[in-house]
Image (cartoon, rainbow, N blue to C red; front, side):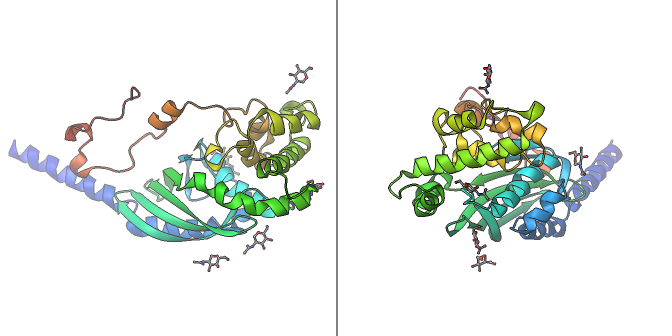
Length: 304
Ligand SMILES: *[C@@H]1O[C@H](CO)[C@@H](O)[C@H](O)[C@H]1NC(C)=O
Ligand SMILES: *[C@@H]1O[C@H](CO)[C@@H](O)[C@H](O)[C@H]1NC(C)=O
Ligand SMILES: *[C@@H]1O[C@H](CO)[C@@H](O)[C@H](O)[C@H]1NC(C)=O
Ligand SMILES: *[C@@H]1O[C@H](CO)[C@@H](O)[C@H](O)[C@H]1NC(C)=O
Ligand SMILES: *[C@@H]1O[C@H](CO)[C@@H](O)[C@H](O)[C@H]1NC(C)=O
């Protein structure tokens, strides 16, 4: 009996060591350094062109609070790198900024997960501005990201701060008086850009609007442009994000800029969004294989 216990102990110790050994802290920090280099304009263009970011597991699940949950390496690469590549190359004034560089403010590492607070310098077209992200990255045995959860801190403050600075630039570009409200200017910039992308890439089976005029009317009059935190809802800003991806895979992304919004730019339920988790496993492991329930901390329920 004692012998069996010893054996079980030896096995669990071996297991614990192997779990903590793969991936190593060096590997996870290595990812972070690489990511900081890669998620930067114009480097994002090379990553976007590679289709699948090599640091992502093929089945990576990523959630970004201001947008959506994305499943798979390709969709995550398109979202994180493809959009930034397009926004940074926009010949007209891009309403969304691109990352330039980032510094790590806080870093916690435990098991195969790191939690990091990043201060990212964005070029938000009319101003260089710091943006704070809080992200948990969980890695597989090979040190590739298997799931991540990112929040943009103070996202509802961003436009309030920066949109007034867009006014003179957009007014000039759109040939409108500077007294035009920021909402109208932003709506017109967005409708032109989204509907041009639709015209160019969403043809044949991928067509979403009967005409460009219908598209412009929809974007300007039927939906709000929305705020940064609404980039995964039935808004103009969501379609503005997705128009930066239609050239990559029209059949996947065209529905997202159309009137239905596909399954991306749609009305969402607040309670469901807040209580649901898309992640197959918790990010952090408790010591000794304990679960939250073991500690009398019941998991979240959908009946909040
Ligand atoms: C990218 O990964 C997807 C699976 O996520 C796969 O179907 C596709 O063939 C890959 N593309 C390239 C170019 O590697
Ligand atoms: C980030 O980029 C900005 C703008 O180019 C620059 O002023 C700043 O020094 C850079 N910061 C780091 C840490 O590289
Ligand atoms: C920021 O973006 C604008 C517009 O694309 C560009 O003209 C400017 O050179 C960029 N600045 C930096 C520091 O990247
Ligand atoms: C920029 O936008 C204006 C309309 O606001 C349009 O006439 C022009 O063709 C656009 N330029 C490019 C390069 O898309
Ligand atoms: C396009 O036109 C058809 C026929 O008039 C109409 O049924 C359809 O709803 C229109 N499509 C959109 C996206 O409005």
